[in-house]
Image 1 (spheres, rainbow, N blue to C red):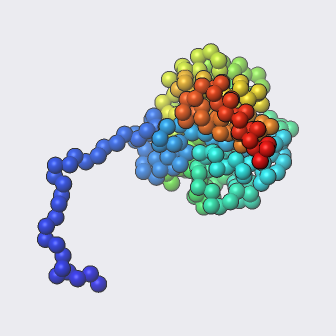
Image 2 (tube, helix red, strand yellow):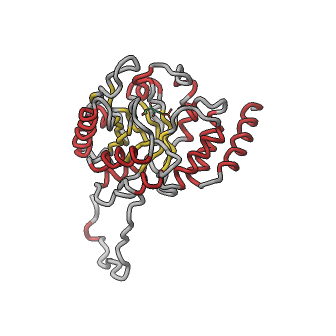
Image 3 (spheres, helix red, strand yellow):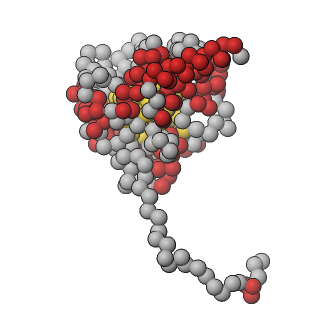
Length: 296
Ligand code: R5P
């Protein structure tokens, strides 16, 4: 037991030191609770304010797509270079080492496969399981303009309500139906709907014309979706344009894991996103690392 007689009488209350008041580094986060902010800090780097998320949740509707046939072989070596992983709970539990220390953004909606109408999703994960696996955020597809628009929006709002109770952020993922035009007008609408209805961050595609209006009109951070595989220099240019035009990072899958040098590619993407390195210089780094890794 502590010896009460030996307690020091003099105490210093630092009356001349003002209390530190630091604004949180992400936009739209000023009214969020501590746990939510701590989880967002596992996804977004407090140093740069941006994130490189590695997306490999494709199997939830596509099965073993190219590059994801053996996640243990192709993705686990990339994990240390990502700020956060975007994945399903099935791959998390079966394949990702529990000592992984980065952010975990878990796919929480699903239902239809590529053989059916994709917008017909429901919630596919309970909040208790998200807490059990220590999720940093939960991702729900939102099909604005899609056949099951209202259902997918309701999936997201239900998840926001559940996840808010536990301080877990919700990622609204704008999913573009087959017949939708991918332009700034559409993405302004889709991203704003996600944010207005409670998503703490939003994932959306890059558009060459007016992307800065998509980020400006969305009151929460936007991460750029990767999309189909491009030549590496073009993917780096797209990432650079996105962050220069207001994105708080990227969530890339195929453009990293379908590269012929994925470990080199994710490092080049990091340079662009966190340091705003010009794409040409990041591409040179990609080539150098690729040759080194081939030799080693
Ligand atoms: C997209 O909505 C899904 O989450 C995908 O499974 C994945 O994130 C797509 O990644 P990428 O288009 O960069 O391969």
